[in-house]
Length: 373
Image 1 (cartoon, rainbow, N blue to C red):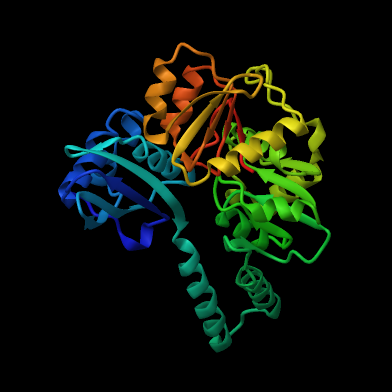
Image 2: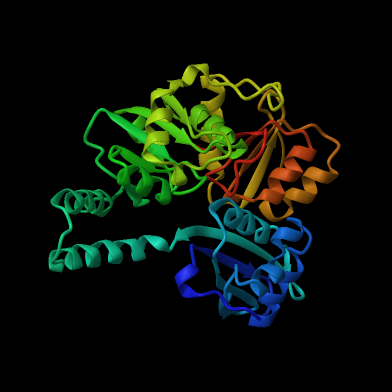
């Protein structure tokens, strides 16, 4: 079986799991390969990706307590950002490991290149000081400026969001650390990352103090992220990468052009092919949902509401998917304690739910309104 070179690793998927029974490591590995087979098409079969060296050696750590097994899964990949997040979402659909009912939750997806870049920058600056010869002072100056821009990356808030200089009035919000690095490398310093698809509290707090410009990828995922952020954060302007491109891969010219073409957030709307009739919530409705969500936190329950926000049913999070599929009642809103997986979103779409309220979402690729208070 092919092995992935440590040099080529781009991302590391960190996931936690819990199983109602005793397991061994081969049970977990078998479930990852077997139960994701066919979910994402032939190009993203985990077995084939590992044979091709695009997924590395999967590490599993187990801990047993009484009859329950908990553990950590680490999956290194050389895939791009979107493919890696698809793999992460796919493993969360696994509901059994070996003979046991189980649940897998992706804790985070780490860009492992960050540490390498830091080393490269520091080493390059030392080597540059030793250079003797005809290198022009202008070239050296540009090299050092670029290195200092990237080296200036900081962390913000309890979630340690990657960011640049946030002291000014305007702040640009992007999705990931790689986006922050690319903007800073090209001279845009007032930038901060959401660190994934989850909407951190720090971004909400910044929106009350700063003028926020949301800068997203030029694909469907970017539009869905925009809708989620605009629904939950005070955003002034929206900027989008060219069609089919990610912010992390843009050139300096493309970045400046995209920021010049930014539009007021109030003018945003999905394309006609994606636009659906939305379930309208006023501020009073959102306050009620926030209160219900806060009261439900830590219960491991899901609350299903009708269009008037009246409670129709309360079920365990573990049985929510089957409850959504079996029920003949119409649920308009679902309040969930914990992280919402892609399989739950799919079940909610099949049940024609219009709003999901939760703290975290594995994906925002849905027409359902996603609210995080």
